[in-house]
Image (cartoon, rainbow, N blue to C red; front, side, top):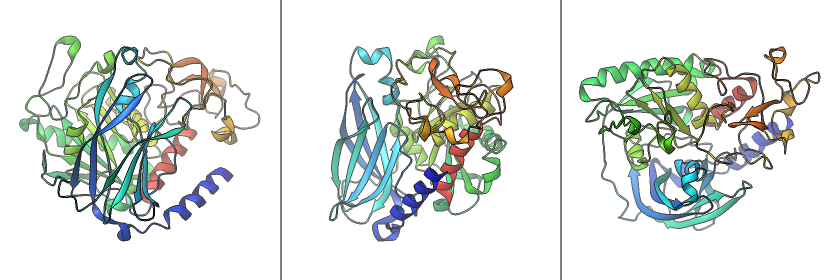
Length: 422
C-alpha cells in the first residue's frame, strides 16, 4: 500500500504542474511513422502529421507513470524542454519481434502516436525498451503546430453514435468500437452488437462498479464485404481495417497491420481505447496495450474474448495460461521481472502483489483447489509452465471464464480506470 500512496503522490505533483489549456487545444495531433527492424533491432522513420477533431484523453493526467508497455512517447515544450505529455504503449511490431520470422529478415509496420494538439512548438521523442526493459530514445522530431503540412483532410469520415454515455470525455474512459466486415445492410446488426458487447463489459467486475466512468462510442462505417480474412481457408474480404485470422500464423489470432486505417476510423469519436469488432463467428481476437483490441461478434465465447482482450489493451494484464501453442519465442525472459502487474518471475516479487498474499499461504502456492479463492504465487503463466508465476489459481486472464478477474487483476484495472476518470 505504501508504494501505491507514493505513486499517487508523485502522480499528483507531476501532473498538477501541467495546465492543459496553457499548452494544448482540445483536439488531436497524430504522427504516423514506420517502425522497422528484426528480432534484435528497431528504427523509426517519419510518415506524416495529421490533425484530428477530438481529444478523448484526460486534460488533468497528462503524464503516464504506469511504466507499462514496450514503448513510450514524450512530448516536451521546445523552449523549456519540460515534458508536457507522455504515454506508454505496445505494438504489433513488438510482438512480431518475438517470432521465428523476425530472425530471418527485417520488416516494417505502420504505426502512430497521438497527443493533444500543442499551441506551441514541441519536441516529440519515441523510446524503445531493450531486453532488460530499459528505455532508449530512438527517434526525435520538432513539431510546429503551425506547419501547413499537418494534414486536415479527413480520411474515412463517418458518423459516430453513443453506445453508453456518462459525460465529458476528458473525465471518462472513452472506448471507440470500429466495425470490420459489417456491410451497409448490416449496420443495424453492428449497433445491436455494440450494445451487447457493452453489456458484456459491464457484467464483469470491476467494470460493473465503474460503469459511470465509461463512454462507449460506435462508428457507423460499412465495409464492402461481410466477414474477415481467413488465409488458412483461402478466404479474403474487403473490409475497413483489414483484420485477418492467422496473424503470425496463429489461427485464432485475429489482428490487423493496417494501423493507419485503424486510426482514421477511430478519429470519428473521442477515444482512449480502440476496440475492433469483427463480423465473424470464428473463435478469435487479440489485443495490444494502448494500441487496439479485437473480438469476433458471434462466437459462443465472445463475452469472455471481449473482456479478456480488453484486460490486455486497457490495463496491460498478461496472459496467465501456459498450455496453448504460441508463435512467441522467449516472450518473458525468466531473469527479468515482467512489467505486467499480474505476472512475476520472482526477480522482484516485492514490487508486485506480495503484500496481498496472506501469511499462511505457502510460497510458491500449490496448483490445487485448496487455494482456489486465495491470492498466492502459482507457477505457470505468460505461456510458460515453469519460471513464470501468476497470482491466482484461476482468473479471466487464464481460462475462458466470465466475471472472474482475480484481486490482483481487479486492482490493476481499477487503478487504470481512476487514471482516466479521476
